Image 1 (cartoon, rainbow, N blue to C red):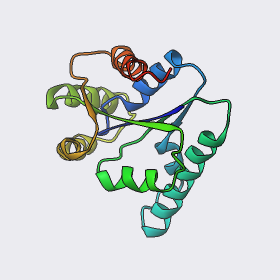
Image 2 (image 1 turned 90 degrees about the vertical axis):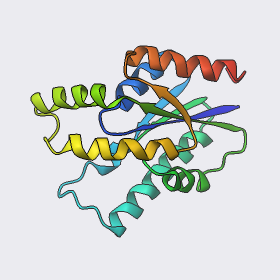
Image 3 (image 1 turned 45 degrees about the vertical axis):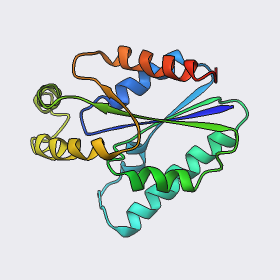
Image 4 (image 1 turned 45 degrees about the horizontal axis):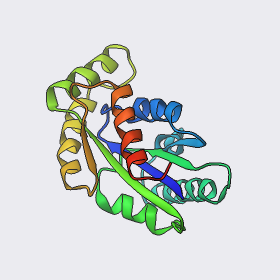
Amino acid sequence: MKNLILINGTMGAGKTEVSNELSKILKDNVLLDGDWCWKMHPFIVNDETRKMVMDNICYLIGNYIKCSIYKNIIFCWVMHEQWIIDEILSHLNLENVKTHIFTLMPDKASLNTRLQSDIDKDIRDADIVEKSLEYLLKYEKINSIKIDVSTITQKQAAKYISEYIYDEGNN
């Protein structure tokens, strides 16, 4: 049985770092980040580019599912609405695959602190705070296991995810 581990959360929630830490814990894994599929210049979001990105994500995940070597497929991305997750899953052959969906949920204060740190380092633009706080509310509606990451480290969140998966009896 393979594990497909989807990790979502608003911008600044720690998806990439938690996924990196999780990839150090789980055996036979691959880490995919949906943001990689949007690294385009010029950055244009329209129906054509959205479809292309979704097709590319489904293709990548699907190929790793087919590959006999990788038992754990970690995919992190914003995925702020349930239909995005459902769309991805609908295009995958999930026979002999256990899907786990985790949402990283920081409180507003810790999210603001994380984002401000990124803004100060010129990693993000200042308008990200308002957008990320707006997205935060959308994650309450996602059918997932919520992890409050307000006061824990990325390593602790990854450990929680790995223990949850191991407790499910899949590894």
